[in-house]
Amino acid sequence: MDRARAYLVSIAFAAAVALPILGSTKSDSFPLSTYPMFSGRQSPEADIPHAVAITDDGERRVLPPDAFLNDEVIQAFETLRQAISDGPEATQALCERLAARAGRPHDVVVEIVTDRYDAIRYFEGDEEPLRSTVHASCEVPRN
Amino acid sequence: MNAYAGTIDRYWRVFAPAARLAALRIIIGGFALGYVLIRAGNLGSYAGLPDAQFDPVGVTLVLSDPLPETAVELLPWLTALAGLGFVLGWRYAITGPAFALLLLWVTTYRNSWGQIFHTENLLVLHVLVLALSPAADALSFDARGRSVPGDDGRYGWPIRLMCLLTVMTYFVTGQTKLRNAGLDWVTSDSLRNYVAYDNLRKAELGDTHSLLGAELVSHGWFFPPLAVFTLAVELGAPLAMLSRRVAGVWIAAAWSFHLGVLAVMAIVFPYPLLGAAFAPFFEVERLPRPGLLPSRLRQRWRERPARGAG
Image 1 (cartoon, rainbow over the protein chains, first blue to last red):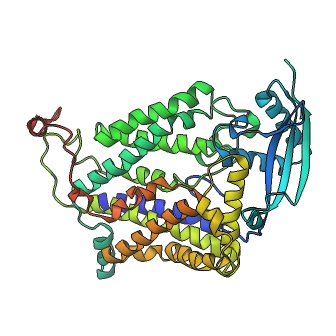
Image 2 (image 1 turned 135 degrees about the vertical axis):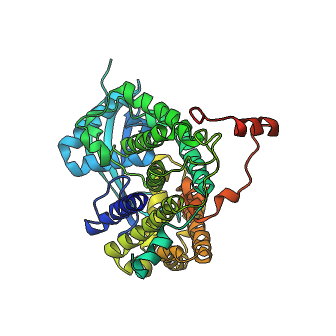
Image 3 (image 1 turned 120 degrees about the horizontal axis):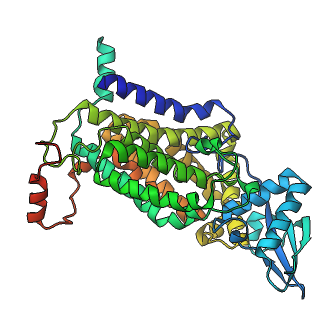
C-alpha cells in the first residue's frame, strides 16, 4: 500500500510538472508552468506602456501601480499591455476606470500611452523615447 | 520484483529518518507560513478589484468572477492559521492538506490578475508533497509521547520527489528558452536586451531597478558567458539527482544564479535564495535545533503522552 501510494503520488506530480513542455511555450499557468519569462528573442527596442495623468497646467504624472490593482508594478504593466492588445474599446474602458479611480483634483485628462525606447541607449543616458503612441484619452470625472 | 525494479525501488524509496522529513516540514512549512504572513496585505489587496481585470489561471479557473472581498481578505489569515498547524505538526492529517490547498488557492488567486509570477511555484509544489506524506511522524505535536519510528522508505520518497520537482522546474525553464529562441539565446544579445528591458520598465514605472544591471548593459561582452551559465544551471539540473556531491555543486551554481538575477535585475526569488528550496537535498535533521524552550520544559513536553496514546 505504501509502495503504491509512493509511486502514484510521485508519477502524478512529475507528470504534472513535465506536462507543460508538451504544450505551447507561450501558454502559462500556476503552479504548473513552462516558465516562459525572458525566454525568447528580445530586441533592444522596448515598448513601455504608461497611464499618464495630465493636470490643468499641463504637468504629466505617471500613474502608480496602485491605480490599477495594488503595489505590483509588473502586474500593472501587464494590465496595460493586455488592454492595448485587446483593442481600442478595452483600452478606453481601462482609461476611464483609471481616471475615476486615481484622478486627483487638478488632473484633467488621463492618457494611455506607449513609449518606445532603445533600452541599451536609455542606460547610456539617452532617455528620450524613440516614439510615443496615445492609445486612449479620457477626462477625469469631476465630483 | 525483478532486480532492475528493485534497484529503482531502493533508490526512490530510500530509507530515511522520520526526523529528516519532519525537519523539511518545519523548514519549508515555516518558509511558506512566513511568506503568507509577510505577504498577507498583498494577498488581501486583490479584494474588490474590477471584474474586467480578473484573468483566472490554474485552480481559480473554477471561478467566473472574482471572489467576494471578505473572502479574499480572510483567506490569507486562514491559510496562516492552517500553516501554523502544519509547521507544528498538530492534527497534521487535517492541517497538512488544508494548508497546502489554501496556499495553492491564495497564491493562484494572486497570479490571476494578468501577470503570472514565477516565484512561488516550487514552494507550492513542495508543500503539496509534504501534505501528502507522513511528515509529522517526528518533531511534531502529533508525535508527542510516541517512540521515534525507524528509518523507512515512506520517509524517503517524498524527499526524493521534492528534489526531483526542484530540478524539473529548472530544466523546464531552460528547455523553454531552447524551444523559444534556440542557441540564439546564448549567441545573440537577448539576455543583455532582457536585462535592459526589465530594468527600463521598472525605472519608467517607478519601481526599484538594478543600478548594477543598468551599468552592465553597456558592456555587451559580459552577457554571453552569463547566458551559458544560466542554461548550464537550468539544463544541468537533473544531474543533481545522481549523487549528493553533484547536488552540492549544482546547488551552489543555482544559488549563485539567483544571486546574479537579484544583482542585475532586482528580481528576488526568496525561496531558493534563502536556501529552503534546496533543503530536501541535505540531511537537515542534523541542523542544530533552536532551543525555544528551556531544557526542563522541553524534557517534560517530550515525556508527556499524546492524547489517546494511553
